[in-house]
Image (cartoon, rainbow, N blue to C red; front, side, top):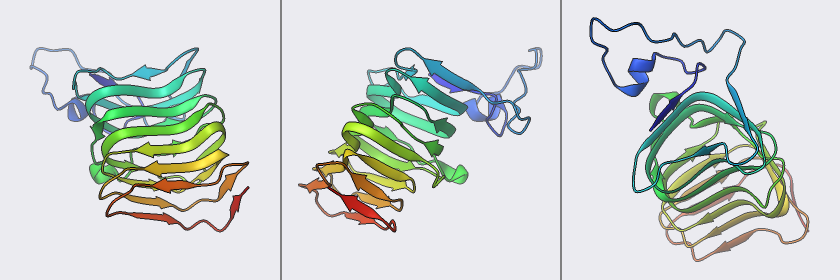
Length: 212
């Protein structure tokens, strides 16, 4: 399963790992700096990953407002994702039982990862690998249960944006995981919850932490 937008920075064949036969017509050219961006919106979930351990690739697009989840998947195998943005209403990520592959030379999976509404902003359950976000302008806000929720798995997370909601962060039962939250943190009532984590580090280095 491969979803490649025009905002990717290389060729379709390079991303997909394929070679066109000599008699094939040329594939569309990608245009990451032409000022026009691929932006997907949805009245439900925007992207649902294939299950049953099927690997997926997402590259070069942006997800905007949705009533459901930007990217959701269960038993999704390995997800290769880069040069992607998620913003707007609805939950950004809901992933369980799979692996997010390292972004390689691109450095980050997401340029911006934001959510302005929903029960959760990011939810990862038994997910391994890494989740790297580039932009400090990313923001998860107004989550009614937990803004950034992680349960199980072994994962490395770098999130530089602000996080706020009823409970901004809940990390439980992870193993050999590292979390680096460098943006401001705020809670409307429940504070941060960290429990049952083994052999890992969780760092909150933002200038402001307001926990009510």
